[in-house]
Image (cartoon, rainbow, N blue to C red; front, side, top):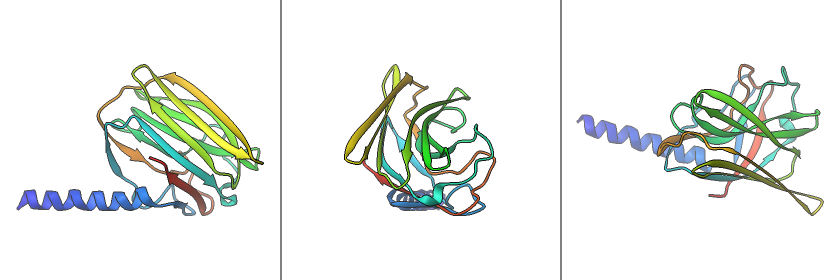
Length: 186
């Protein structure tokens, strides 16, 4: 009987995870950090590709220059131990600044990648190798392709982990409802 209950719980988690993964517009409601259920296990994860677009609703008055919101990524174990994410925050009150947001053995690192205008699609690709981690971004502004590339030493790889979804703030909660379009390219 216990094994049947366990299978049912696992099936429920994977079904709810599929809803989170396939959602195209992520809504962060006022007064919250993120959506109600965003958990999806991942195995042997080495790369991730997304196309994102931030709406006008993502502009807010930041509490601190050190606060980063999280867009997407994955974790090997607890996300404050070893994880790879794309961070975002408001830049000069009118665009979005993107960063590689990494925890390596419990130590946070933030590496700024690019600033993107609102309502512009931007492709972001993260890949881990044996000795390095790469992130690339590509956007089109007035039909001009603009590419950015950044590389750092890799983090401790494990064969299991979980996907990470949009999350507002560290301590602060969303001051108003925000919508971010995220298309899964992989």
